[in-house]
Length: 129
Image (cartoon, rainbow, N blue to C red; front, side):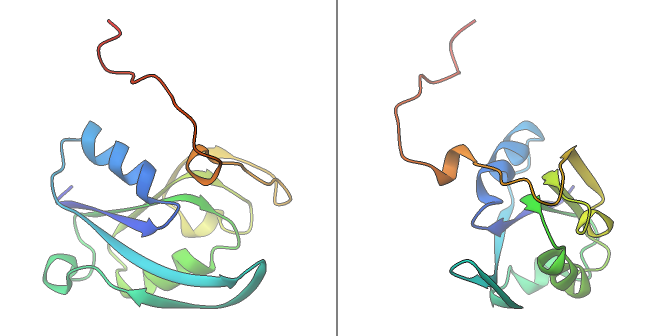
């Protein structure tokens, strides 16, 4: 991959981990708003990644935490059709929009991500060997 693009905000933590593990130094973000509080609205891009880097998405890995309805990924895929889309979790309605995911969950599952919860101290993983 040439670059990793995180869908903000949920995709930022997984994208950082993926970029580190794959030794990819070029990381950018795309900000898409598809919710007003708890209500879904029409997805729209608030901030785009570097246009010269993105092109049609060839060589770009787009990362998000979850694909739910698929509307966010559908919008981003329409902008960068050759990108590879990866999520940590996928719900059935959104699964057709993602190329790679780790775990499928039911449509009514609510997932609590560590980066969305109250801050707490966690021992660093590095140096435990």
